[in-house]
Image 1 (cartoon, rainbow, N blue to C red):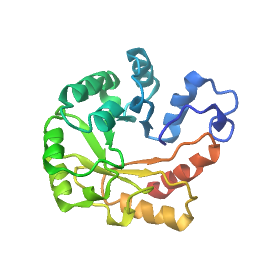
Image 2 (cartoon, rainbow, N blue to C red):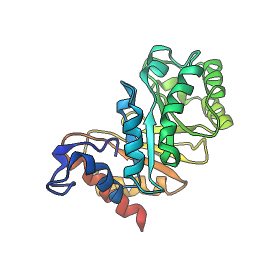
Image 3 (cartoon, helix red, strand yellow):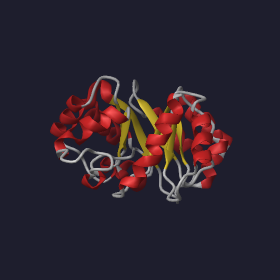
Image 4 (cartoon, rainbow, N blue to C red):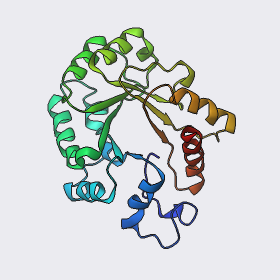
Length: 224
């Protein structure tokens, strides 16, 4: 899921009486990864990251959504130091850190030299996913740049066509975030596409506990 800290998910997902401090530990018994979106707007203190790391088992992974300053204010330009600062803090998660996700705004168009320079400045030794929102990023040249640097294209089915997804890294990245309810057939088809490679998959998070149901169904489909 793209989030985990929702008291309203009790008792449908979290058992009745689950303390806020125990939510992540329980969550990690049902899912193997979580996408943290709050980092898009604010910095998380190191103590919280340490608690998250210690509350989850080896093998669990966190995706950290990069701060808006990198993607929306500086728009990928001259962001090397800002990316390094973000990744250095995320490294508090140690082996639990899976991927850093960069989501660009809908009005940011593809400029090959900008994307190339941005990818070249990424801190080595980490996993990265890139979710563009402007149609110009559908260019084959964009995939070539991402592939050259081993950055995974992130597919958000709210704005992208899942069927045309092209892997650009050793892993794939999917965000199933549309508001419309998924049918069983749609989940099965997504499971087929995801199974083609190692993948991170996250479903939309809301206060409504019903949002967890398709994610649980998806886990069952991919476990077969």
